[in-house]
Image (tube, rainbow, N blue to C red; front, side, top):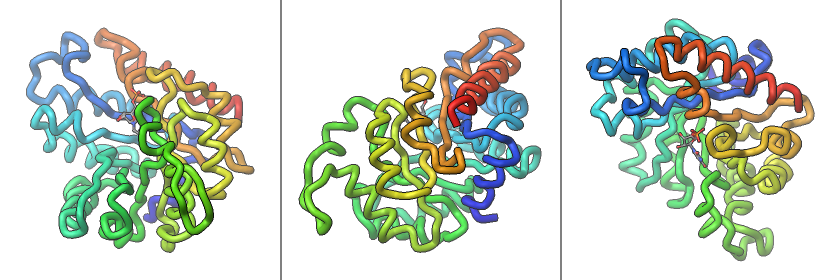
Length: 274
Ligand SMILES: O=c1ccn([C@@H]2O[C@H](COP(=O)(O)O)[C@@H](O)[C@H]2O)c(=O)[nH]1
């Protein structure tokens, strides 16, 4: 199924804009999982099963698996999500960016090996570096635009001359993706919850294009301001990510229930402003 079709269905059927980020850090796992060779898979599977009915998508971050030589556990995790929660799209957060021939391999890795429904991509190497992902029209291509970290301003906030006049670099990215790169309707943008004014500006530039919004929870982004700035006319359009605040809500054997409680509170807090 087309990523965007699955995402829209999940927004509606689950009544949720929440994306739970899967950033497994073994040092933060509850004691009973420590030392198990499959600890990453066991931890993430329990989080997924405890929260799937509350989310519009899951977002595993590949670095947390690769750093621990656990790519096989990432494969197994995504396979589990597709089998047990088939209507829940999976975004592989990899932030890839490279020349076209290498990007082709990254796309195969994301969509064939890991069977992700969407991938995050760094657009700052230009169109030819993104084309290999756009060539998969059913897959979501989610481009970094205005990232949530403070240093995002170092480059993304620079003023540049464009065919549409002078604007900030992130605005030019938003406009370019919306006007030129989204021919198959499979593009989305990353805009941090830590910068609501820029969420509003991006929304102005891209119409109803979905936005992946990290930065609530551990990074302190404001939910009300995020919704006011980024929701579409029908009260959706956003995948609002929370990772650490959900994953590490509890430290004991009941960690998945604790994660569910925080996920539910977060979903409800988001829904209050739709
Ligand atoms: O601008 C960005 C882009 C991606 N991320 C990723 O989102 C999560 C955020 O985790 P929290 O624990 O909820 O802070 C993480 O995987 C980042 O790599 C981002 O934070 N900002």
